[in-house]
Image 1: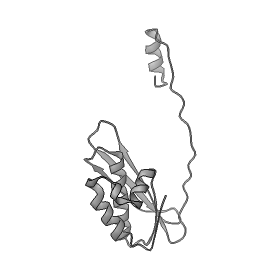
Image 2 (image 1 turned 60 degrees about the vertical axis):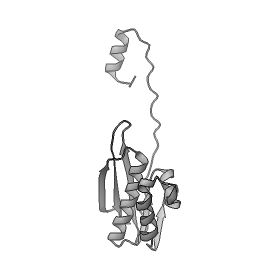
Image 3 (image 1 turned 135 degrees about the horizontal axis):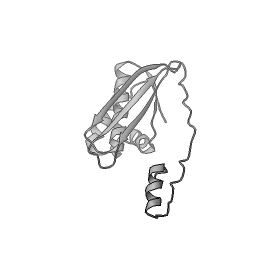
Image 4 (image 1 turned 135 degrees about the vertical axis):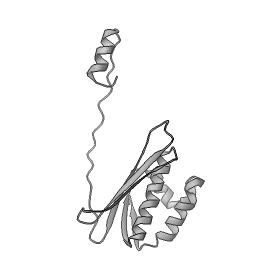
Length: 146
């Protein structure tokens, strides 16, 4: 049951025993600004099982926490990992275009971080784009991921 009154009433009418879902674990997460001269980009993806597409987006902020850029897009690839990899590629490309030399890229997938370290591990559909991005555009003097 989804812990709402309507579900409870329906289940009670049919005499079904209720097993409420556990309460979600609440975890406090704090955003930390980059140091002076750096830009931080937080990226994320969205994908729903059974859907034929996914989407991604990201927000660039300066050391004062001000938004200096944002991006989003959808993909015809039904994969959360592919969407997050594309978000990384787009973030690196945008930083390169804007000549932002010091970038802190924050993602919530350790698998995607491993792909940045070893681009050959990513699926072949995204491998060329990621390798070009990592090898060419990571000529940025400072690049940090977490």
